Length: 347
Ligand SMILES: [Zn+2]
Image (cartoon, rainbow, N blue to C red; front, side):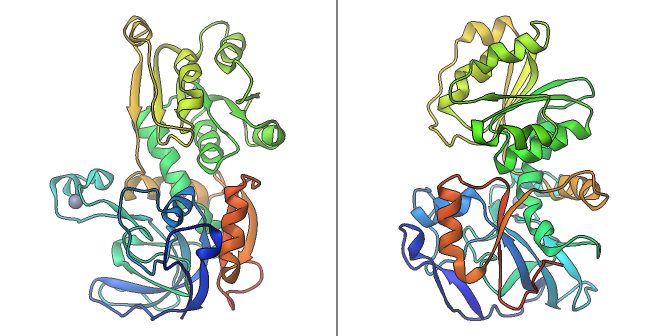
């Protein structure tokens, strides 16, 4: 098969489009012909090598995948079934897994992280990771859905316990997680405010944010209070980190919950403990989500109530250019790679 792999860490051009061995059929697993694979920031960190986890070389990244079942050993999967892949991998037998809290598994992993992912024509995955998709959902959209919407769903619904009428502030609403969080919060009847770079503000507003503040310069904590009669946000969705942390905490209403899933601008954050106890705040970490949550979110995707934003679709052979585009933060929405012969429009 063809794959876009890297044999060493480095800049985007370490990604080489080349021949790679086909994955071998195994019991309990399926071989899927990849029709589309969406990029995530995680892919950039893997390629650069600044993650703590040692990844095998040569490496095939890609956690967000859709395609068709070629062969499944076990279960009653038919060849040709259109699927998207649950990106999380878990042991299936520890107490966390048995409780259905698979993203708390001590051996939790992602497709394309410690094993090969979707920057390829074929991928091998456990049968549990297959999620059938309806015919009206394109492969491109299906690949762009799982990771960011699963992350946003777990943050808002499970960790943040979002309710109708809550005020939700989504940091970096133009990012993948941000776009998903705006939609998931709106789906639950929340009032949504967001921050973004000025160039992405209008498109972020169009996703359902009442107002969008410049997250570089604005005192968005004060902006949110101004729009809510001094109350602030019940939930702040954070993944920016150091650069926005202080303002994010200040934006919280009494009893507010700050949910964070990332720290792209740095991971050392300070907090004035007086805010924490006097205003009875909750600081909540969040990482990925469970397959059950993904299925719940997917039901809204399949009925058109949640929709990933697609920035650009590129051939798999141009994976290096796709990485450069994501690295430059030029995109609005997901960048999707398509293997050759996968069809022109992702249907
Ligand atoms: Zn487990």
